Image (tube, rainbow, N blue to C red; front, side, top):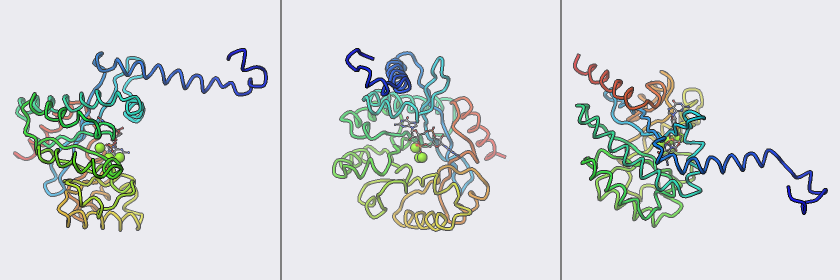
Length: 283
Ligand code: C2E
Ligand code: MG
Ligand code: MG
Ligand code: MG
């Protein structure tokens, strides 16, 4: 508090705001160093095919292994990274690491599965995106078809012309695209059909009460039917129960992801899960 602010302003002094602002600044400074200090981690959550009952792919989910705070979830630091522009270097690291991990598993003899990486709006609109993707694929000698990018509807529709150009280049590279959290934005399938996309991930808010909420039941059924009619792959997010599984099976959804099968796992545990899944097939 400065002298100039005077007595009348004293009531506006808020230690809480100060603390929030300074902890934000501290976190920003620490996040800047997280990359070089090797504190970022990718965990992997399986996607399961409802046809085969087997693991069909995985989503890479970022965590920050902070020395004092422990595993910091992306909801805490991705917005900060997005605001400050740090997301561009962090996002490039995520692409690199996901491709590197995929190659390590291939070298360990595990089956080549689709690996999905989340892109933030800023990263999607970055000039470097296509080069970053190409660089990650080439460096780790990965087939482009193995890689999928997850982007939200609003990332695509906010600047539709630019998005269409970027998506066309991504598609030309042979990389797949999924629309993440579908249903939470203001876009519709009739809008999205103009873009070269491969997959729709139905947001978990629709799945949460899908077995008891008649409206969500109708919405999920309609989205699956329309999406499939448009040739898209349909994934349900946040599947936690047997009842949800049965409903999604009954409407012929393609894949499920959620704690019912497994939450996000560190690489070693994910590989273990994959090996168990493989063993099931052989027996
Ligand atoms: P998302 O892409 O929609 O990822 C799904 C989120 O749902 C993950 O949260 C996952 O752990 C959580 N989840 C999965 N199954 C269940 C379930 O059965 N129940 C419930 N309640 N939750 C479930 P997480 O890992 O905290 O990630 C949150 C968001 O952070 C992601 O949402 C994504 O938007 C963003 N994110 C994560 N990693 C990255 C990244 O590498 N780059 C960017 N730009 N964003 C990322
Ligand atoms: Mg995602
Ligand atoms: Mg999602
Ligand atoms: Mg979500």
